[in-house]
Length: 315
Image 1 (cartoon, rainbow, N blue to C red):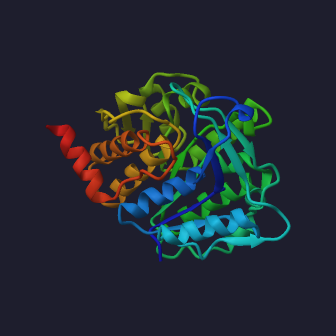
Image 2: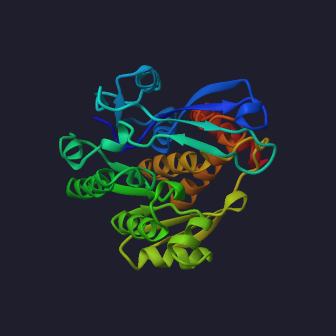
């Protein structure tokens, strides 16, 4: 059985080949995305096993995604197909600086119909870490309840829960609903991975230690605050804390997917019983590597590439 279990919505993404509006850009490259899928690719390339649960439409997008999941050696046996709903997709612009614009085509998608019964039916035997992101609960009320069901089941079997808030505000009806839901999941998670901007929204502060204290006081055990190029700050319920410096990327092409790569680095480090600062350093390195490519996951490294990147920056 897999060490890691996650669920979410994978999507086909079409990435503009040059800057401009949709009417002005003729060529797009095809790729795959979805926070939990990016995360799963990251952990399997680092030599760990992952099971990925989702619902896909019986359509060309769904077939393409499932084939890709199996190619990446992710356990795709838990994927369900439906003829009733379609697989989601989105367009992503190309920009010369800053983050690209994203346009979703995912409303009422197959994955938005994941429900608690689906999670109750999953065999989690042997799972050591369950990873949840804040995107999945934004898809529907059923998805929201499914995330809480998954966190509860994880703790029942003695597995840890890691949570990346991964805010996508346009998917929520209101900021109030978003904050309440994401914090509720975070309070039921062992490891919380907010970004500094997410901390400002969810915890009401952009001070890393205050963000960490907010979640630690509500039940989380470890909080790792992503600080961008500066690195990351961590604090545990036992009071251990520190800042781990970031790595310098070879170039910055697209920052989308950096948080997913970071999570993959941290989680695999924790499963390998690395000291927390080393696990965070691995997360920083993974994030620095992925932002040098235009895709969300195509440049995720294997262990040899990751270690070589870290070693090179020590010199």
